[in-house]
Image 1 (cartoon, rainbow, N blue to C red):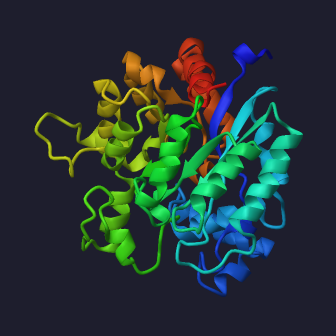
Image 2: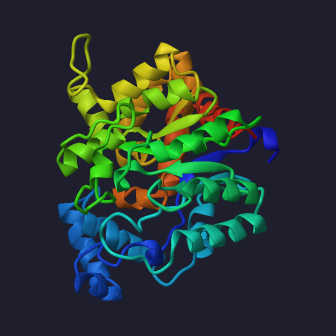
Length: 367
């Protein structure tokens, strides 16, 4: 397959059980899940009562099933075979150390080192991003160093406990914005679910990064604020050269919300579907470097692909949407990776699928 026709899955994960906090689920359940027969029995119950596997126990069971006792290379090999030979994959680390559920066995530095070695062995296949959390010491200098080592972009995950426009990230954004080829940024953008901050909010979390005013939000309100598409508007205006992808196109719940209660002029921002927010931001032309991807969302329900095809009729949305699956988190949707990718390709048709899986990734990644 030539470089000009190479498919790119812009959103997968290879983190393992060793990168999750030790209280992701309460003990002794986290130990029991390591027993094969118990885990399979639990997954059977999950399939019945939580078929989309959105709950924390369901998500943890899937993590253990996919990655317990394995390294990132073994996890990657599970997804690689689902796609045509030559497909490239953007691999996004997950930094869960500060989500308030205890320590992780292997640090984010260890996860980055292992991923970098994996990418060095398969440079035409793996495109590694570096996970950034502003609460870590010297995060700006560490991220610059990682980009210099070969990481291709920056991964944000605000529901872990920080605002995407956190002031501690401003020097990083400023540095990237001034580069000849700024590294792209991909950020989780759906409402908080199982992988989110579970601790007690600190005063630092409550400060509005734009005004410096201390707020008084509950934890659910705070995490929703961190992940709301509106929270990226100032970032996109201030650092206009940065390519920013709001992953998941708002999330499956907001796609349901859009279908059930379509947004109309006059609806308040708090009621507006996040799918609508992202689509409107892209359609407006006000944020020329705003992107989105269909990871997890389009793998969660068969019906969403028809809505996607309708949305892609708009030229700006068509040119700013990326194909991604969210493997192996997508396994929690009980829809097999290869089957879903094939269905999306068949319904969209070759021209549209090529746009989101070949042409757009090349522009977003700067490759």
